[in-house]
Image 1 (cartoon, rainbow, N blue to C red):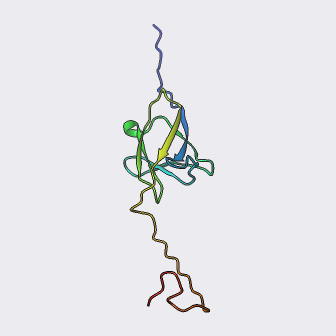
Image 2 (spheres, rainbow, N blue to C red):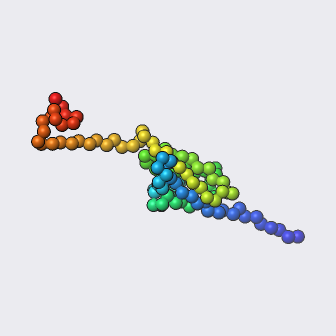
Image 3 (cartoon, rainbow, N blue to C red):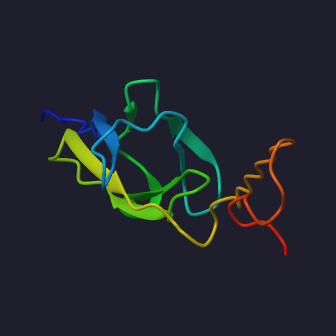
Length: 113
């Protein structure tokens, strides 16, 4: 009698993460499991590599300023392209002030009268 032991093969899943509007690669995107365990992070070119045996067959991609996204991991799929959408709600507010000492407030754009 011959017995064969079948082992589940865990192949790496590779991919790139881009900004959905600009198509620019996103660095520093954190990839986590449902239990918030970090399993990967995108590099300066948006490239990442994780194991295909993720619990629930999915990981969450998170980057400040972008909406988090659930990525479905399929063992038969070894190359992924992920696009994250900018999250206008979480972007930091920017204030710009301009002053000119040689002009009155009436002559300065946005000046108070």
